[in-house]
Length: 484
Image (cartoon, rainbow, N blue to C red):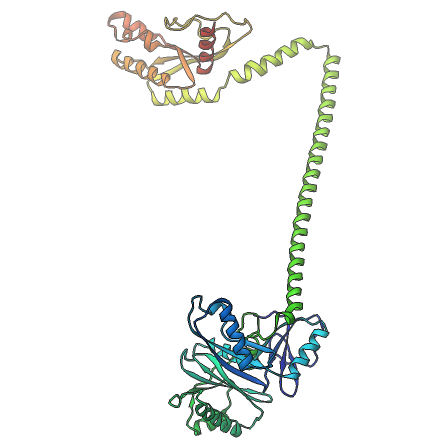
């Protein structure tokens, strides 16, 4: 579609009228910098047919140029309906339909636009735009003959189409419906006499702008009148046809030299847009860099303020300790023990949860006593494993975590039930991944709980004591012992 910032100049035999992008007439011309699209609706319009033989390359182009000079001599504005991209690539005969406009008033008007430095987007004939309009209508046949009639303020434009290709055009300067109907009939008879139209053909007549009086007159002549088609815009069919004058419309009459100003303006606009985009990207990059620098400065300022506050707090603590007479070395040692031993060594929530889960699953077991402490050697009373490496005489200040608890079976259990309870407790504790069992009554006293006699009764009154140590500490002890 054409740009909303461009204007349109409809060149008629008696005058040239300005229109806006929507097809509405304007009382005053547009300013000089606004691009213009020129539509010629003149009497000096000629349609020719060029039959191109099977040629290629320069031979084909030279033949077409000679035919233009022969069929349209001294006609500066020429255009073909078929675009160059639609010509066959192989040596094959084809047909070109062309139009030429030889009008001194049109050339003078174009020269005036160039002198005013007004960009000319292009020049088209109204007949080609009418053919383009017919090609876009779904209600019209694709093949065969069509005769388009467009009512204008100064008369009527008639265009003959064959398979939707314009082959003839005529401008009638008469607004009387009866006279227009007679001229339509005489024009069709002339086309038959000149063998442009087949004698047996009955072209469909399309009234692009509905006119009841003209329709009745055409039907009275026995012509094949097709149903009228509604206009797409409120301005009428003429506005719809004029809106088709844009870069993709066939039949561009303007030469590249005439359009140079318009093309240069589009190139400048593209360069300006690209430059603006690059400038925006550069500004955004600088903004991000500046924001990053400000953020880093803010973080550095906050870190400096925190350091000053911590130094002030430390100074206040040193002054308070000095005024209290506390032993600094002893306080430092207590803090080291707390940081190195107490905090990483004893963690109560998880072990207590595991023990609670174990006792919940064994209702016949009663917890008698539990203790968790830091000792020089974990579970010192545990029996020595012959496969374990010898103990390493480490630092005497090093402490180890020890977790011990005693469980008593419920009174009245039979010996075999007590033995099963002891085995279940031992297997459950052996499955704790974070703890290693060093004192295990299930392993040491296996079978003793089912002994008969008085000894079995006495043993039943004693509690079973387990002692465990963290698995990580035991692995560290084993590694140190192997390395020594």
